[in-house]
Amino acid sequence: MNPYVLTILLFSLGLGTTLTFASSHWLLAWMGLEINTLAIIPLMAHQHHPRAVEATTKYFLTQAAAAAVILFASTTNAWITGQWEITHLSHPVASAIAVTALALKIGLAPTHLWLPEVLQGITLTTGLILSTWQKLAPLALILQVAENAHPYLLTTLAITSTLVGGWGGLNQTQLRKILAYSSVAHLGWMILVAQMAPQMTLLALITYIVMTTAAFLTLDKMESTKTITLASAWTKAPTLSALACLILLSLGGLPPLTGFMPKWFILQEVSSQGFPLTATVIALTALLSLYFYLRLTYAMTLTLAPYTINSSTPWRSPAKRPTLLLSAAVVSATCLLPLTPSALALLA
View 1 (cartoon, rainbow, N blue to C red):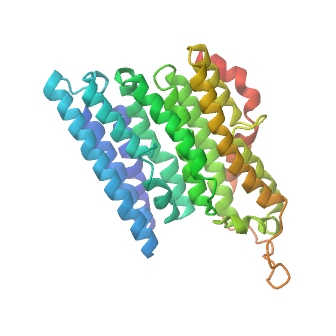
View 2: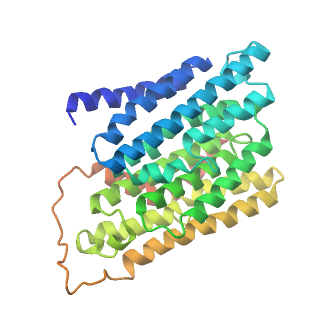
């Protein structure tokens, strides 16, 4: 892609998200979401591969439908109450419609079915943008409207997302689909406390972005898109393969890695608010996600690639791209749990 075109598209991505962050009016927020969608579509389709074009079409249709429903919900609220401010979405029907549309925007279950298919059809780099940056603007809107949303709706979306995110990734062999279901599960954890403790949602979002960035950059560096290729990854990058196991376990929330911190805080907050059954259910659904992360770790460390005698060994290749971001992401995804007291102080 032409570097000037790429610069304009990336600038438009930043502009759309910033516009949604800074807006208090539903029309401005909707414009920011539309700029975000239109900016990432050329990045998704620039391969000109039929699967990439199919993924781009699916993404455009779902995002356009969600944007139309958001506009309908905000217009309905303005018609009934006379308020266009985002924080004044007080009508219960309009609030429920808007939250459901925003859930479709970010891929919360049960409106998640587009996310694995779209991620499967695009590159790992574009998938990283789709899994991290594109979640920011809709999540900012969810945090603003969560105060007026029905708590049962948010809890149902959260538990369904963690359950589907864990269950859907069990039989997958494509790494991008596994990361898509991982995204669905992590978003469920964020939405669960969006109403009672939004600062914990922000903490979970930051740790999710760090861990997902490390996972995508690691797989891109190892050029792995299927589970079967993980078994031969150690021949190309043995150190990175060992660190990749820690990143996957951190995504699963296993102590003493970074991913344990937000799950710990969220379970503590939900229990202290008087919902021990909800905390128990969501903790059990986390075990499903942990299982397929352990399966990937097992495939990477304790198995050998099939047909090793008849196939050529993938020898180590020299680094062809900067690895500073990868190094920072890996360290952050595995070693930030000792900063838990500092995070508690910031959340207090």
